[in-house]
Image (cartoon, rainbow, N blue to C red):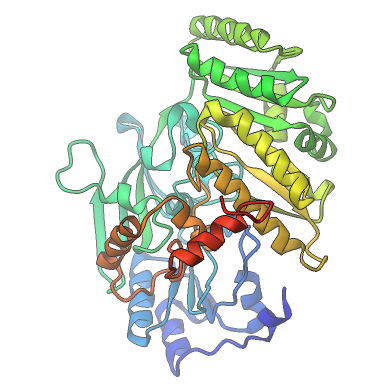
Length: 489
């Protein structure tokens, strides 16, 4: 933690701390500075100290906390597991962090209608483990699924490797219950035959700026009858990239297509050697196809043809469920594995067309050289969701500032090919200054107006998503920042 952070002493308005304790119970309110430090950060590089952390157990308790915050004019930030990668759960202006960790119940499973009712603190992987007995699972599977919660997934519209076939969080949320800034409870259905506006679709990806989700109705998916997992290695990144677009162009939509470059594979091999990934390959593809066995044989044969046509040097098929799990353990451990080769990393989350993967990765290599920052690439290649990991040592003066500049340059490269700033991590604090690279003043104003409908006081997760007001000069400066040579883009 920085000295500036630890020096800040929390100070709630007189009587507010006691009122919070009456609302949720004395044991479930933290105000001691040492306790608050644990909630001053998430998985990003940003940090800020809250004034209090509360742990409500019911929707009614959430309402009470929000009403107290409004009465005292104090910001409110919802927090799940703290695994977010954009600073979305950080109390940038202080105030009250509302942790949903106690609201972790699976309230109902309805196999006949393929849905479940859950509280926001339910861990993503726990829902699939619970519903497996009924022959179902919850499809969106972020790499942090063993820790991240469904409330946080809804906030950022999280994705994952298998959303290439199944879709991201918003495609699986049928309804939400959430508390607005005046303490009202809104229960909105997103069923196909529901009249009115699609409020669940609006809440998904809103990053806690509309309200606090207290319940969700989610769609369940049948477990596939069979799964085949392939691991293909290549001697160059361009061939690997071409194979990705070639597979989809051939009319094949695998359940997942993940790409890892050599630096990422080296880190994973040190962290999970049992995964047995080809460390001498320039790039690796990990693919899942699922369905009925006869269909899978045809799909696998077609995929192998595309991989060979793009000079795959080796294609391995998992011979057992255990080997398949090891392949995926390696992939899903990639971010954690970076600790084997670097003290710190900064991750970006741009989205590009599949056909632009090779040229954008070339640009990422150029940015890596220009800024003298090692960059490992491990990402959802099937839907063009890049996750470049910029490696650095935060103990070195100026290192963090340099990787942030390099990350901005990568975002500009994504925008230049028709891409977007985020695929699943959200904008949060990390990318809000980059929003003008994609959205004009009218676009941003429309978004702000929508946010003010739900929170006219601006107390829900303030200072997130939207950039500070800036003129043309500030936007030009941002574009220069995104250019490694410092020239205008």
